[in-house]
Amino acid sequence: MDPDTDGDLIGDACDPQMGPIDHLALFNGFYYPVTINGWTATSGTWTLYSNALHQDAPAPGDRMFAPPTLYNRIAVATSFVVGASGPNRAIGFCSGFVTGAQQYCCTVQDKSGGGQEVVSTSVYPTYANQTKVAWTGTFNVGDRIALVQNPANGNKCEATQGVVDVVATDSIGPSTAGKLEFFTSSTTAAYDYVHIVELAN
Image (cartoon, rainbow, N blue to C red; front, side, top):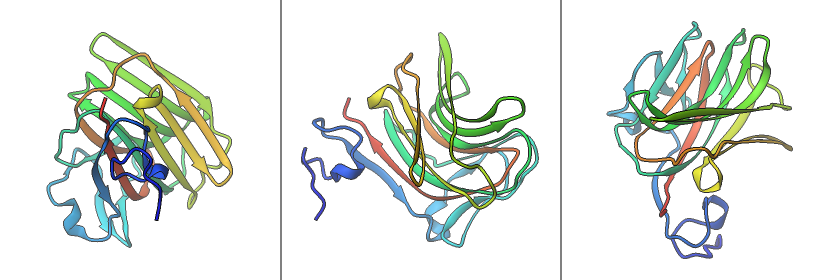
């Protein structure tokens, strides 16, 4: 049995912070199409098959997909398999999304001229900032990358691939309530799961 040091019913390995009583808001392994009923595609071709959530439109532009729930301050974990290759690719998610004026994003991108990067973004009504750190893993078709964003730890965006672990931290703004949105840009992707924890503070 996995340890649960702070007794919040979230095992230590998955708990974004020890001490406060956090709440497991959602785990979706994308096994059955019914589990995305009510989710909304802003753009792109989002379907569930082969035990993954797929976005299959590789054309330029953001492709977004969101569950209907407005969450409080959350920590998010997911992993994805990279789809189509090409320039200016980005795959990740945003939380706390409110009409474009507020969001906290965690992304792996391969921008023309900028190289491959892990990006932590904070956008709040009065300010915005972005921290970029070179991605030292691979970002090729078929590669799997895990992403975790934890606002309890400086809005840390952490990308992991095998022994490669790259962190971008951007702590300028408080993360607040809003939607979670998956997104891709200029590529396709298959998300394996999503794990959302609402933070106690």
